[in-house]
Length: 313
Image (cartoon, rainbow, N blue to C red; front, side, top):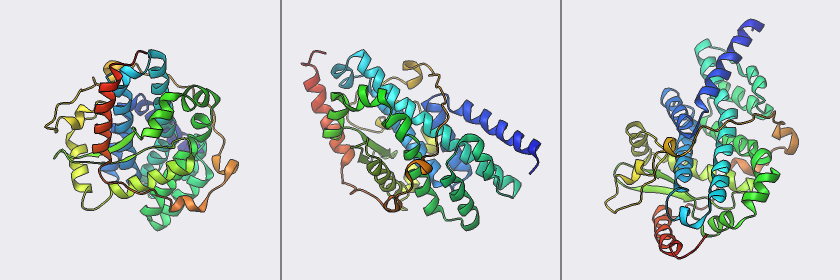
């Protein structure tokens, strides 16, 4: 590969990655559109659905009950945590997706270009393996492992987030009560999902990712999930799926009406694989998938709404 061609690819991928990493909505759409063009890369669909959930969590912060429970500073800190983690994952993952797509178009692997984006050697090897074997099951697990490791030091172990977020009562209460649920909706009004708790433990985050993978790509459910994403525009508000409910809900405004675009500092990341290696259990780790998690989430939310009215900040 000539250095000129190499440089053109890197500049093209950098530009597209920056443009699509502007906010939660652009990230969600970028992942979603990528999957629809490259359905063999299943992680892109999982990422788009998890990104939708991140947007819903962000705008939940500005309406009851969360608005009643937290002060302005606490809400901004939680938003910053969601935003930073999702921005970092996209900045690492989206160049990988684009390089794979360019490799398909050129008919040859271009994954060495990923070094310019500080992608771990682990993932470069996994993309080369996928190019040879087309093992989609292994690739989605590799991407889940990789992206959770990517945020481990810059977010989970970062002193500011540990001190201001993960050791404070709003996060601890949410984790204890399992108030954070990743929801996969359908236009029928049916909801499937999984509670997210012990988020600061990397083994747990990877296990949750593996279980969500199994749920999303359940052959019986996947067509209805796809029908939802194809026809319901992401706006960062739970109205996206709550519009299909028969029960009244309190709807958050669209994300772009609430939050400005955040300018991130893209610090050079060390290769996590060199720092802490790979646990073999990550390939098969999972957690039990409870029935009715979204229903319990709404029951708890309703109770919290009543309680929060009597709690001064």
